[in-house]
Length: 71
Image (cartoon, rainbow, N blue to C red):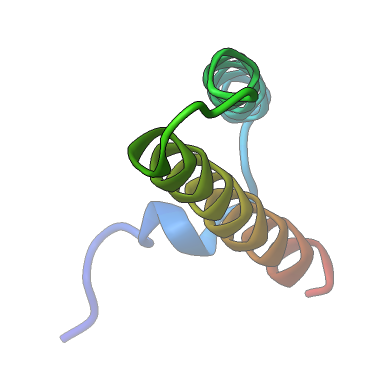
């Protein structure tokens, strides 16, 4: 038996979703900007984690956008 409703992840992103993505990207950018001048190895690690998290979020978001618009 098939589910009654399709999963959201298989449907195109809505305009509200793109706005939410933009807000989240801005928050990442703000946090990276605040951490941009690390003075200790711990602050450098924080900066590295932020950049990694941003790249992962951007990669997943881009893949979803591309996958749904190629259909």
